[in-house]
Amino acid sequence: MIETWIFATVALVVMTRTINAYRAGYWYRHATSGIIAMLYIAVLAIPGLLQSRGVLTSKLADAGVLAPPGKPEIASLLLEWALQLGLVAVVEQLVVAVVRRHESAQSRRLPHERLDSQTTPFVVGEHYRRSVFTLIGIGAVATLVLPTADLTQRGEGGNGLAVLLQGCLLSGVALLVYNRHFGRRHLTGITLGAAALLIMGGVRSPLVILIIAVVLGRLRSSADDRLKLGYIAAGLPLFGVVGAFMSAYRGNIARGQGLSNAAILSDVLSDPVSAIYGAGIDTLDGYRFSEMVSNQVAASLWDFSKIVTTFIPRSVWPTKPPALSVSLSETFLGYEASGMYLSPVGYLRLVGGSYTAALVLLVVIVALLVAGLQRYKDGFASCYILLATFRFFLGGDQFDFYYVLALAIPVGVVYLALRRRNPNTTTGRRSTVGELR
Image (cartoon, rainbow, N blue to C red; front, side):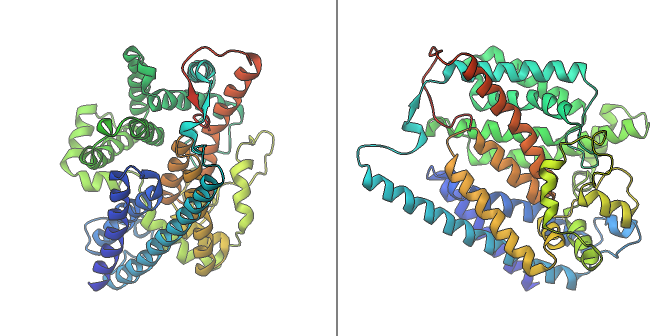
């Protein structure tokens, strides 16, 4: 199909630009479009082509809602996705150009000052390290003492303080990884223990920010010490297999199947493609589903307010509306407590009221993500921005931004509290403005 070649060409151009920027040392300039292109290929184009050939099953077909996509529909969708990817790349290029022009103008006005955060020394070393270990301590205690608050479940109505406290552990470990364990190898055990706990708990999403922290932590090092592109490329399918294993492990416990870990791993490795795409990655189904129900849903832009209101427990607000993906999945698909990924453009179509409005909202969101990444490229906040990009363009829901906010809030609170308590502490290495931002 010529449509396949058109999509592949656009995706290749976007990915090539991202790789060239990475090699040149400016990874942040085109990282946003690179992540989005990777996801469009992995969770839209590939499953679309496989479903049209009968290799993969569709959750919509299983629910009796919509037949699997045929080749003509996939051809049309590939053109839509090529347009969306092209739009993302253009918006990113414009935002980066504006930022670079602004930085250049400031440099000319202040020729003796470097304006990037890497050259703005600020003594925060002691507070920084204390913040990291305080977060880990709070999170560990909260995880052991408080009832489990599954931050990753879209069906959860918000567990208030428990979510924030338990999220401290993940943010603390991510900060530890980002700073390469402050040069202390024995601290690696904390990261390995946390990762093992996450894997055995069947929770996949937290692993994403740890991977991002590893990559960005290496990018802050010298060029010779950065992760090679080959390692990153090899790690992507490995992450998919690990995610599939975790999903199967969790399903084995929930359904009481009684399979051993070896049996689960054997099943995953015997058909890794089906295992990966059967592990809850239903972005393609969500894209088609959103288009199908778009004329039957009275959603609005106010749905974005749930980024904040999701924190409110149902015990405080019993009538709080659920996430859009959860309510639609319950109404049309018979789901009980979880929601299908709506896909980014699918979700924006529903809240915006039309496909055109979805593209406008897509432009706004991409512009904000790109601008944020350029602003905080030298700080830990870049991990949160890339996590938000990955999650939203994988799932497509306000919940994805809530998830990132729930991880970020405790970091800021703990750091500011420690600085206020010990404002005159100056021991420790010299750091940079924006490391925790």
